[in-house]
Figure: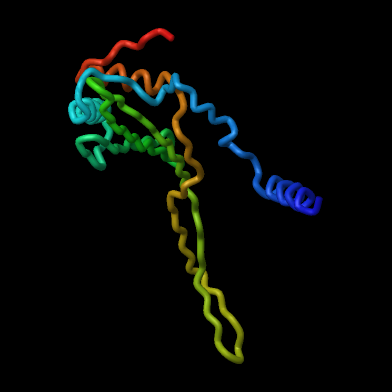
Length: 171
């Protein structure tokens, strides 16, 4: 009986402290928007991904025969900055290759901090001087995986211009 009470108490404490659990919405559905099949080997498929990203203004951060990482920056207004980091992994599956894509959008905002000069003299007190400075810096305020299926479908469709895409089988 003690073990049951202790277990229930532990669960209640962890639930109260943990906040919302976003992973509970993960379905691990087999019809994932993050993957597409291509009738090419892994290096040809990843080369198609690299060319697709380059054609859309992404900067290639790393390119391996089976993995590509790229970034693109956006600034919709002067105080907000977004960056998309795009990752593609290519895994051979028999005579086909599955390209797995994942994009993470990170938001940064311009934050200002100010400081003023001052000094203290022992026995006299402190003195503040009218010199001040302001520092502006971009601060990360959020990030999330892009989950829009149409975003990935547009990417995979464009990839099909560089590597033959396998038609989806109806389930």
